[in-house]
Image (cartoon, rainbow, N blue to C red; front, side, top):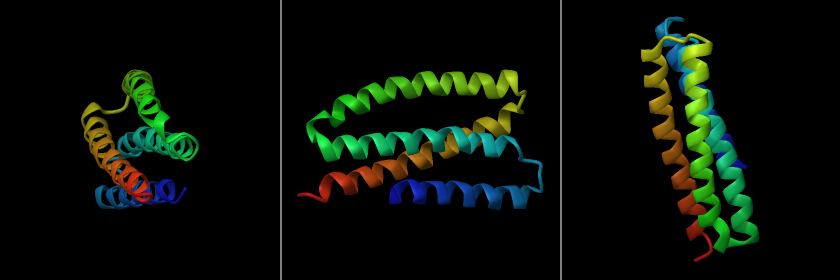
Length: 119
């Protein structure tokens, strides 16, 4: 759970800094660009951590299934944000892409630590 707290803190702190620097010109797009990837990596991390504790050999299958679910979620999320909420595309896509890359890299670092901690 520490990993989720770190990822959440990093996301919220960076969003607050961007919102303060941009003076509202970047919101709500930057916020929504952060929330989707943050929710996904938090759920993904919790699932992988629990599966690894119970059955380490099942982690690959869970991660593969998770990737498919992530693709479907992100497609629906982007559609809802851009078409239904009418967010401005450029700030949302830049924010979404940036948070997606950074948060998934953080998750990968935490997974490396989890997988190598028992060696």
